[in-house]
Image (cartoon, rainbow, N blue to C red):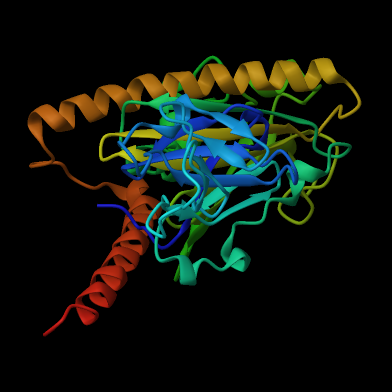
Length: 351
């Protein structure tokens, strides 16, 4: 079951070009396109109202999106504006449209009740717009696992020392003994982990010159149902990292956008922004390669986990101390789903 009344990442803005672009999001087949006049992104149900043909097989024309089967044209609101060989257009000749907003290099979509689609609720990520301070590269994976399993993975960072030994990991003892503060919120949570006086991991030492021991932080904000904002870094031990992290050292920001495709597959949108050597494109490229390598390790683990859960279910699984943030995350999502179910029940005739 998905939260529907929420903004999800549908695509990177750069993915939506001249041709129709299709993805299934929260079980809904959606086609995205840019209106040739305004350049604005539109999103329609990927199903023509004539014979049910996917609209992704069509093309963008001046009036909107032309179906590739019989040439009917639909505008950004889903209304049919042209039927070849027919002057009269029936009022029912339309397809469902979805609210979309292009913001911070991302295309956000609302798949729930349109009247509740408040753009002010979209997760703000201004770092994508500050290329001087935070040069970055972006990626999207199709993952054969639930989006919630990927969020679980981001909420419990003790896995870094075991899955990512050659990149962003580090000493297992430092991760297990890290101090961590979790602050729940109505729409998610915030947590910060400190690995004090620890050895820098390979990704850090490849990027900048550091001492043998550093004070390392991992700050995460989860906004339900599918956004995680990360600021991670480290500076030489003894330089007051807790009071001032804006010192020369290693620093990166990562945007994570997790959008369900089905109950057991999803799209993982992420960007890695370089907070050091910002005037060196090679540094940004190298950082992206390091993070891409690490996240593909996550992808392999989580896909295997999903396959096992499909085969064996969740019976007998336990929680441990490092699950604190994950448990709060799941509670936030359950609250949103329960609220939607209650609202729907209230609109049911006779309820």
